[in-house]
Figure 1 (cartoon, rainbow over the protein chains, first blue to last red):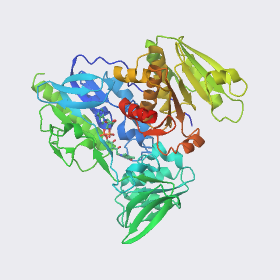
Figure 2: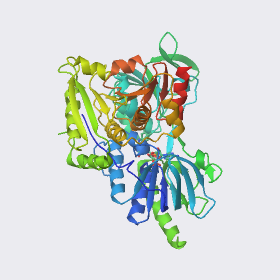
Figure 3: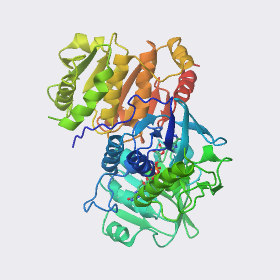
Length: 321
Length: 212
Ligand SMILES: Cc1cc2nc3c(=O)[nH]c(=O)nc-3n(C[C@H](O)[C@H](O)[C@H](O)COP(=O)(O)OP(=O)(O)OC[C@H]3O[C@@H](n4cnc5c(N)ncnc54)[C@H](O)[C@@H]3O)c2cc1C
């Protein structure tokens, strides 16, 4: 199926003025914060480093648990709709990478690849990136058989054999997506039970081409040897090689918070906020996967985004900014 | 009709600041090419959306002279040509997220505005040897337009750089040849590669490596 679509990034943006609110990162949290902020008629700038908005949402092939869609829907489609909604509420979107921040003054300064941006308040929604397994052979083979995105790379494994590592919702959802391409999938999980929602477990168990390898740790990835591509696994002390064409890893996420180290209170890399999304610095709010919280999903990201924009508006009103 | 009215509107908005004329030089093949006819149709629809854009269509098998002039080696192919031919090519029909790359590259060729720093452009202009970038992408990959556009910007900045954006799913043999198992994947002068959408300096480092 051929689909042609555009969204609104990279249109010319004037960044010389001081914005009421700047939002860093256009995943579902940032898009929602920008939407609310635009509707409050705050002068809003949404900064996203990629040409495509949506963050992790844009990489989800088939989203099943977002309320309002009774059939599986592509994350890319929802992301595009969110972006259009944001543009309609008069928010400017700038395609730029945020490299540094200075929170010392009342006006916050944000150094980006396109120049310095000034804003009275800030929502940080820079999200997260997939966590690596951290085993030998993983890093060297990224792009040579090691992947973290089924939607991006699944089509390269048509009729091939692959391993998937992980036991959470993302791992099981992505395994289901990969069954569209691969002829055989080994689903490897280090525990005997999956953490994923029961409904996903039922679905995965009903697909014959998925073979479960539980209570098993991946100890190494060797894709360079002459006897093919091998994943070294250890099931309760019993080691063996699994021959595959590729491996997809879904073992959690790492927050994109390096640039805030030293300026904001973090715990395990996640930004600490209260229920109103306030960080330890006045006028700075955080939303979505980058925030310390228990459930990281689209629904909670959009919720955080709305609350953060609301709190930012109240802050601007109280301070008369 | 591929482009629904709303998308036509979005594209027209993007085309408002076009400056130089752009020629979309499309190469097709009568049989044995799954997306050639669709690619041609898409480019026809795009050309309709601005009087700055014109379309030329050639047959890959019979129009030998044009094939060699534009150095085309597979179809569907589209050369995006402005005041001159900057070596900007798209292989495969640009659907999904790759459609963004198409529109960005047309704007790039027409406005001549890149986001490269001046020292980056200068380095590329003064390259001792020709440099060939091949960016493998796929229509479902949201990170790909950034990588594709960067390569095309480099080609625009320097007559020494040629940049092909290649759909990995539509050219599986090439994806195999270069061991592409994740996109975006940029092959640099056949020997080096860079994975992911990275900033310009990372690609320039790799170019330097290949020229050592
Ligand atoms: C494969 C996969 C499947 C998933 N499936 C589901 C599912 O089925 N249901 C569900 O509810 N959730 C799912 N999730 C989780 C969900 O996608 C995330 O919880 C959600 O996207 C978090 O939103 P966010 O806005 O906080 O961050 P992100 O989506 O991570 O977006 C952050 C954005 O910030 C940008 N950014 C980062 N740093 C900078 C910087 N320095 N400068 C500028 N921009 C920057 C990034 O480019 C990105 O666009 C899935 C995730 C993955 C990876």
